[in-house]
Image (cartoon, rainbow, N blue to C red; front, side, top):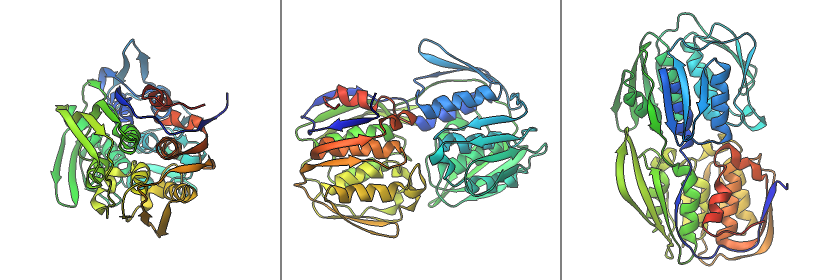
Length: 441
């Protein structure tokens, strides 16, 4: 079967009600925490993407068994010292930066050397940003450059640390938090604002944690080496996956969409704040609390009077995975949109910022990029007629999905390669496009 799709026309207007797959960030964290709990945890609506399946394969290699039941996954943990690690263990994190970085935190006390590898894209990402703080706990981490492969040999006596997380990376923060759970004494983390799923899960599992929220940072203190019990968790829908359908609806004339049971955690809704400032018609309804997370049904309508934005940098962390589709809204808005300090996008699965700019220019959108700042000159009458081929994007799932949304919203004839890239985060993406009326080959 060909590993590309062809989109030859805009999507017709629609009025639909859909459910999006489970949140990837929470799914991976649930798997890893269940592997350290005492007893059998049940996780409902676990995202079955490659990243999450690689997380399950990883805990299996560490001696933790799991079963897929009719409508949940059961993971049998044996506590903080429950991993049974064999010699010459190799963990393959595939494309998942979250898995690769977080699992290192749980391996700071391993008494056998473990090798961590990943695919070509993951291997180029920066692991020094996580190896440096984990070494402070006493772990030995061997990496030749900044990326994978690397090897970790834990310490028998991990020591608590004070850690200043200056990037705004939830992965780095969470890896240190998981290492702190395996460490006696109190670890203190001074972290720039980023998604807080790990903190909320810790509180729900009664792992000793205090969080003091300050203007620019969160001060997190963890009292380590305290076992915790197994749990039941129903993973809410992923707002990052939902964002593609939110933007498509905003840009598709006379369309309406309801996405049910989506995680609208404040640290993840930067895209909503940005799009509302651009005059997008988005409402949260039926909002409720689930184990500390905020869940809602998102109602979206076509928005015809979109306006440009000078995007406040405070939204960068909470919208980091959604900027690609935000750029599409900027391309269709009246005026010049400005985005600043987006260098972190180039440290994802691909040089995502650079590739997004190239795609925008390819379809005739005027973009000025200086360092990591963008100016996007919007055109409310943007309507494409030409043929476009999208390739050579390191199989970045978000680039693939951004390209699909551009094709469906703006027109033209598109050939978008590396269809299988979506398997890492959103295997049902094309199926959901079908549900709202998209036709492609």
